[in-house]
Image (cartoon, rainbow, N blue to C red; front, top):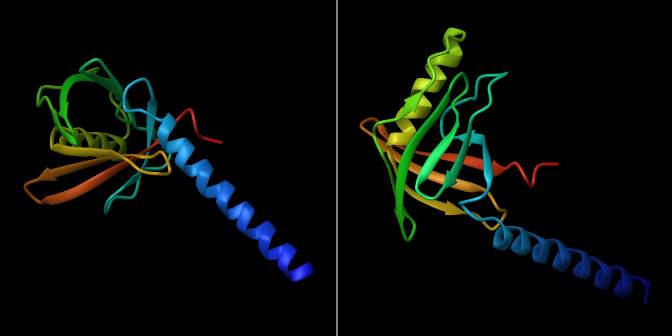
Length: 144
């Protein structure tokens, strides 16, 4: 009897976790959410830097590790195109930060698709001459 109760409680816990993940994904939207870069395919993020994006009515703005930037974007279904002209502030930072920032802005210009995972993470898929990559962002609203 005790083993059945333990198994039953385990199933209830698992179901509530899975339901919670689905609820998170359904409440997170592309627009109106502040996104912080948490993972970048094949790239280790420079310690001490923070990269963010925010989408609002066709505008895309954020912080690229050293400077603030703004541009425009268009989306249709899960396809996305970011305008190649990106305006940014011109602050100087340590060389590693500047290299990461330049790489991030290049990746941003190459974005072709986006999606929000069931865990509520934003993924931007980009293509550059050297290959494909994924920028993964966490909602700042969901951070613990």
